[in-house]
Structures are given as structure tokens and as C-alpha cells.
Image 1 (cartoon, rainbow, N blue to C red):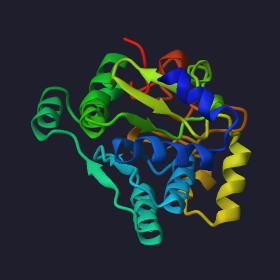
Image 2: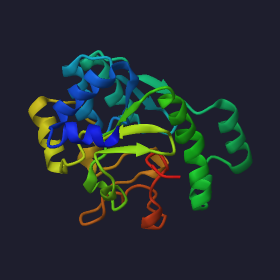
Image 3: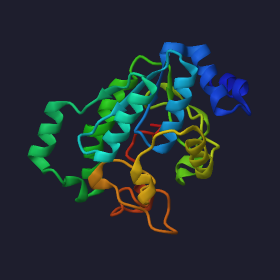
Image 4: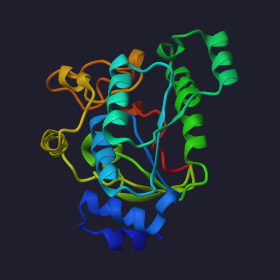
Length: 232
């Protein structure tokens, strides 16, 4: 199946990829948005396609006010339903009761435990029952991600993942936003390139790596939350 999709979409642009997913998988496909600039491009493309592809987001409870702003603007402009998934109450209460509200600063294991409760488990519920998971991943975003492909099998979550913007550069994304008047998170204009939870995100300085603003207190090689680990 993966090789068949790759062959069918070889050289295709993002709009064509979205149209293919709609044609072949329809309502069995789902797109995850965190309202970053890449995700906003895909939301714009989905609005143009007017298909059955579902959209969801993970609200960790620690998002920036600016993220909620662009979430609202996106709903107002595109009129597309965006299903919100939240951490399970008991798991979150147990985490905070045992480790406190800032345990993610203590160790990589503690940070991953927080990510699991706030992101991984809700994600697993969000994609359950779907055949295709669409993401806004680009190859140049991190050393880990440039080893991926634009279509791949996610062994961990047992789902096909397709990244329509995989070969896009940051300038490609920014140009698309300007040309199509796509709403985006104003933090991007303040040096925030990769935006996640507020306590775990800072602005990136000139010359720093793309992911330098995420979990900046950790070793560079460990800077993934686990959402896009495709192999067990």
C-alpha cells in the first residue's frame, strides 16, 4: 500500500496530494493541526478541497494565548469543524499530584511522561479507526525528520502517515501564507518557529537550530515528544 501511494503521488504538489487522499480514503483520513504555519497551509488546502477529511487538535492545557487566537481565527475563516482532544482527567491529576506542575524540567523521562499524558494518549484516541494521518511535517525541520519520507507506515500507531509539505522550505510556507492571506500564529513573527506548550517553548535566536526553542534545556538529540516516532 505504501509503495503504491508513493508511486501514485511521485512529484505531486500538496494540493494534488490532498485531493488524492480525499479520493482514495475520504472520511477514513484525518489531519492533526497544532495551528503552526505548516498546519495552517494544509487547513487552507483542505478548505479548498471541501472533502470529508477530518481535522483534530490536541489541547494540552498549556498552550499559548496566541495559539487559541489563531484557532478561533481559523474556525471563523474556514468554517471547518476541528475536533479537540484533551488529556484524560485522572491521568493528568495523578501526574500533577505526584510530580507537580513543572516536573518536565527535572529530567527527560519526566518531560516525556508529561508529553505522554498531555499529547501521546490523546493523539492515540484521535487517530483511532482512521487509515491515513496527514501532518504538516517538513523534511528540513529537524535531523530526525529528514530521515523520513513523505509517505510512511507508522508502526507504533498502525496508520499510514502522509506529509503533503514534506519537500517545502520555510520560505515556501511563508510565501504561501502571504499569497493566500492565511491566518497564522503571531508568535512566528517574534522568533517562535516551532510552537508547542508555553512552558516548553521559547523564541529561537539567529543561527540556532529549528528546534532550539523546544525543550531548550535538553540535549538536542532528544527533542521529540513522541508524536512522530514511527518505529517501535
